[in-house]
Amino acid sequence: MWRINEGHSRGKRLTMAEDPLSHPALDKMAGEEFLQEAFQIILEEAVRKGTDVAEKVCDWREPQDLQKILDLELRSSGEPQQRVLEHCRDVIHYSVKTCHPRFFNQLFSGLDPHALVGRMITETLNTSQYTYEIAPVFVLMEEVVLKKLRELIGWGSGDGIFCPGGSLSNIYAMNVARYQRFPDSKRTGIWALPRLAVFTSQECHYSIQKGAAFLGIGTDNIYLVGVDERGKMIPADLEKQINKAKSEGACPFFVNATCGTTVLGAFDPLVDVADLCERHGAWFHVDAAWGGSALLSRRHRHLLRGIERADSVAWNPHKMLMTGLQCSAFLLRDSSGLLQRCHCANATYLFQTDKFYEMAYDTGDKTIQCGRKVDCLKLWLMWKANGTEGLEKRVDRAFEFTRYLAEEIKKREGFQLVIEPEFINLCFWFVPPSLRGKQGCANYWERLGKVAPAIKERMMKKGSMMVGYQPLGSKVNFFRQVVTNPVVTKQDLDFFLDEIERLGTDL
Image (cartoon, rainbow, N blue to C red):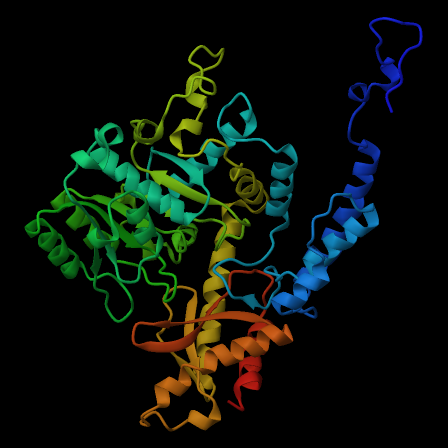
């Protein structure tokens, strides 16, 4: 309650001691106490239990039941600190443990402690990486990390930026390619452009379709290039599609090749694609969001032979390198400032031209964002701790586990590879006893297609592990197993196959 100073009959005012603006509105000591207790919960529930093979990958609940357990309602009055801490514990407990040794569901998994500390520091500092003024350390750090990634590609110079995900990196590539070919399009828009044609394989990431729609190019102007039996783009069909587009009056301006397709893990033949792009004057982009980290391995970087000829590359270290979400780099061979010219809006309230330091360090106008999270620190800190050699071992270990699992599958009755793995995507069917020897039956494939979803439901409700499945073209549902977590052991992979059998033997 505000008290009036009785010594003033006119111009009454509050005493300084009782003016609420004279004191902090947050209790710092209580806040620190909460943080200490919350960090203990994070360490125990998310880090220790979340990586403990004896714990569940998830404690499954149906949506309506989970809503009751979590008490998600937001009220007018705050709750006691211990109750808030209970909420923290519940949130972790009922979430999927993506760092668990038996989580194989996504193209990311695992928990690197150094990367986690980087993420914590980033969140605590809560800065935006658009100017040197507000993020001096991270502006310098980002360029060092991007330079290192470019060197692994094979570029001596270039440009780049960290983006919120590989999808946006691919969209950036398409936008920069259009601007490079038609710089006036930034001002005049699509009305002054010819019909633009995009070329990508049938196995490309769906962000290519989203990008064409988002940028006004239109999904009807995407020419899907055929793939071979391994899911790789067929160069002869790419040239056929380019010539077809030209005959239809379209301008072939952008070709997307994929290194590590989402399902089969295929690598397009980059050298042949680069030759065709040079011949037809098209921008050559490589979506290496998934497979780019193979560049760190001297044994496996041959999969990306020819990537140094690309005009741009998308690469997600948050996948195979395990930096944590999100860490996605958009990399350019161009060093003329193309990225800046394409996206800049020159807002004078942020990018003032009369600053006391060199304006080149204000990199935020290279992006379509304003506020931008710091995504370089977790990768930088992890790289500092492990070194390039340590990251190379992490990549090689993933390949070795995939080879081990593929050989084990060949030894087991009822397991059938969809394709021999080239990368770390291991795709296979489990054929339950009821379907073995019945491949010639009319409804065999229909029945087999129902096996993976049924097994997935059982493992989710049991909490024993998680693995993805999907159909592909004429192929019915099959499992796609991916190992990126370095804490995984052979025992975990043996358990994985045993559990598939246990859960599917009666189907």
